[in-house]
Image: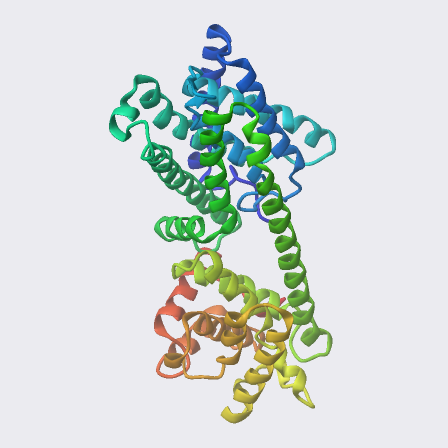
Length: 429
């Protein structure tokens, strides 16, 4: 089981994020309690919006954004200038204080129902919203934003610019927490921070929910500037539909993953592969993929393909000893791989996963990186299961096959991952 954030060698980085968020929250709460609430009606509206967004979510911790309504409401308050044509004076610290209080109040009923509160996600949102508010509010209050952008059709460029910078800030924090989580998950490979950051930025640009959150936050702030405090009730409605769609997508994705896990076990139950083979290959292939810089969707494709790489063996009349199809003729290996790919295509796993399974029997120079990793890790597990002399001997045989069967870089990455894990005998279980 993956350890929660804050446990493991990278705990200082996570503690730094939590500590910064806690310090910012305490300063904001102290400042607001001394100065009092400016525009308490607006503070109440946006506080309720953030709290309601947190309460209606049912997403599990670890999802990219399980509370889009809360995120959009917090961003809207941070980017709020005028209200019904009148300038506001709440400032950046009040924005942070209202968001922190709203998140804390929403956490109470969740904890009462026995549901875990994700402290890292709350810290990330506090810092992200604080960044947006600090970038927007002082420039708005001083009139500098109006001098730069004017008070006409170009003014929306100001909150949009702040939104882009805020998205980058959120990606930096998300990548840091993801790297810490990967390290806390075990002795496997630690993904490069740069790769995780690029993956987070790509996700922000390509995820419909993320785009909807940012757009709704900006439009809500501009709507309040014209229509007053009632604008959020109208403008945030479509985001609820986005949240429902995202929830359904998550359910479909979970079902697909369960289907693949069940199919992967079918070869073990039928006696075609050793017990636990697919699970071991998937876990080790994922670690090797991280070692080689794979993140995000590419890592998910690799994991799913590793789980399903042997499904084509169900077409054999008699099981191959130990499930090691490398002893079969090349044409038979190719046929099994193609049949496995055809099965994967019917599971809804996606054409990328099916392509990796279909290319398992190809020379490694003709394979994508994911297929090369699965091929090498699968061979390692088979060699360990054959008692060839332990992990070191299995790695030696893989290195001897780098001329045609295995890419040298993949074999060396496997060796580094195994060295960090103590060179345990993968095929033993």
